[in-house]
Every structure is written in C-alpha cells, then in structure tokens.
Image (cartoon, rainbow, N blue to C red; front, side, top):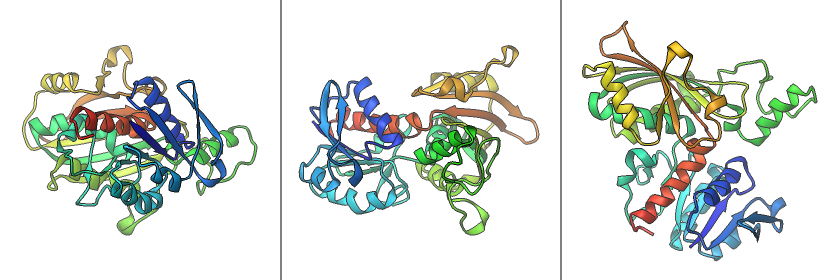
Length: 329
C-alpha cells in the first residue's frame, strides 16, 4: 500500500510519520511530500530513505491513501485531484469540514458513517476532536441541550513558527512574531482570525463541527478560545446542560467504558488531567467531573489531549486504519 504524507516536514506531518511507524501501519511505500525548499531531501522511515517529492509527482504515483496536513488552500486545490485518481484523502485542514458532501470523522465516535463513496474525509479541528471523544457517549444517553466551552490551547496548534516564537521569547532572542503580542508569560483570547459576531474562527469551528459530528443542530453552544504559553496539549473547561436527568456515578461509568478516553478524577489526591502528563499520548483525558448545581441537569468537566496526536495525526491514522478494517481500501 502506497501512502503519501502531504506536509511531511511540518509539525503534524512529523507526528504522522512517527505514528505510521509505531502503529505498524501496513504501507509498502512511503511518499513524503513537502514544499519546494525540501524537495530532493531524504526522510528516514523504517530504516529506509525516501526522497521528498513535489505534490505534482506524488499525484502521478497514485497513492492508495494521502494524508494531508499542509493547510486549507493546498487541500482545496489538490485533494480533489488525488480523489480523481482513486486515492483516499484524509485531510487535516478546515477546507472540507463543513462541506455537506464530506464526512467529518472522529474514529471513536462516528467512523461507521464511512463508505466506499468517500474519497475525501475531513479530520475535525483539534479542540473539537478531543471534546467529541468525551461528549458523544454522554449525548447518546442524556442528550446535550447546551454547551459552554472555554479552551486553553497550546502554541503548536498554530504551527512550528509559533513554537519558535515562544521559545525565542524565553531565550530573549527577539524571534519572529507570529502572534500580535508576546505569548510567553501571557494569554491571548485570540485563536485564528476574528469573524462576524465577535467570535474567532476557532470558536466557530467548535460550534459548527460539534453539531455536525453529533448530528444534532439543536444543541446551543457558545465558546471562548484562549492561546496559552505551552508547546503541546489543549485543555478545555466545559459546562454541559443535558435534556435528561443524570446520576454522577453513571456518568463516570459511561466515560470509563468509552474508547480512547481515560478518566483521571481523584481530587482528594490532586489527580486530574494536565498537559504535562497528556503530551505524547494518543488518548483523551477527562477529570474534574462534577455536577453544576446552578442549573438542572448540569455537569462540569475538564478535558486535556495532545493536539498534535489525537487532535490531528492520531485520528488521521485511525481513520486510515478504519478504511482498511472496513475493507473500503
């Protein structure tokens, strides 16, 4: 099986390559694709060197799967071209997420929607992704009425240049400014661009993608996304109002049995999810699970996950694995 990784030298692309190896993905030939300045360089993968090629050359090689992590404009232009030659595209950008003809998939939540007709499959936004692993099993039982989401998102969600800005500020080396202000020792209530209504694009992604994945447009959602000065992992404080009554013990049981999810909730021993423990893990971590006494059927939770892994690369590989498991490829 030939697998192309579009954006192979980027932050997420590097993680994809690592996961393809560690998860023993059944590929016979790797096609690493990157920008023009990297073409001709070599990538070592499973003791074999592969030449980095242009996206045009990758298309000519007709891979079975193309894993895209190269930005929305690249995906909009090239994903249909790969699909036309029979390649299954799994895309990490926002390009196809809200396209009604494309599936938006979280592997543990709704992979059953995949069919042989799906040649471009969208990966959700990183902050939406980790949240769905927690919310979907609860929504099935209690039906979510309203969500208030506050995210605390690491700089790697912006990309390598943002990591360089953070580390450069810590070294006092006058780095290139990716954000409008310093990020070290700071918090920016500003993830992506501002859109109509005063919400950022990131906040709107949380709202719109959640409704699409849960297949329920009746859920009322508001969100605030904040950039925080850490390299990896996003944290989310989530207030949930359910339509139906719940027992807290049952909530714990549901979450403990849910795939891809680890419950870390022992406040007496100061045990709760933290980025320092969640980085480089494929699972989503949830804790601080407690009733909201200010409303009927309210629940508060705290969710943390590695945004480069489950928030991006891991789910991409998991979708590819599902395509093989379901004999779509």
